[in-house]
Figure 1 (tube, rainbow, N blue to C red):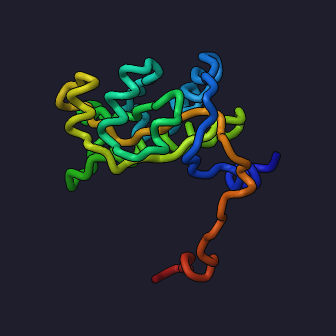
Figure 2 (cartoon, rainbow, N blue to C red; figure 1 turned 60 degrees about the vertical axis):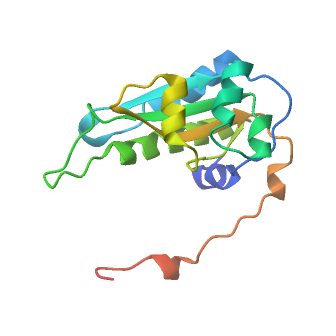
Length: 171
C-alpha cells in the first residue's frame, strides 16, 4: 500500500472488539516508536503498556469516556524531560519528540490491522501517581490499542484544502 493511502486509513477508533492484542503485535508497534527520530537523537521517551484489567481500570479513571473502556490495551507515551533536547531559548522538545513517536506507533498499529486513538485530555497528575512516574517523566498521550469494532471505511475523513494551509515563501 502506498504511504498516503496507509495514512488515510488510520483513524481515531472509539470502539474496540473484545479481543486481546497479541504481545508480538504490541512489540511491533513499540518498535515503530523506538526507531522514531528525535531532536539530537536523544530519544526522550518511555512507553508503559497497560494490559492488566485492574491497571486499565485505574488508567481509565483518569479519562472518563465510556468508549475508552473497550480497549484491551492502553499505551502511555511518556516524555523524559531530563533527557530531552532544549533549544537555546529554553524550549523543551520532549513534547515534539513524543508526538513523533506517537504518530509512528499509530501508523504501525494501523499497518497491523489494529486501531488507536490519540488521547491527551486526561488527568496527567493522577496518571503519574497511578504509574509511579518520577517527576521528570511526563505522561503525554494515551493510545488505546485493539482491534476495531467497526469498519474504518465508516470513518469521516474531512481535511482542509491545501490552499488553506500551504504558504509559499511567506505567510
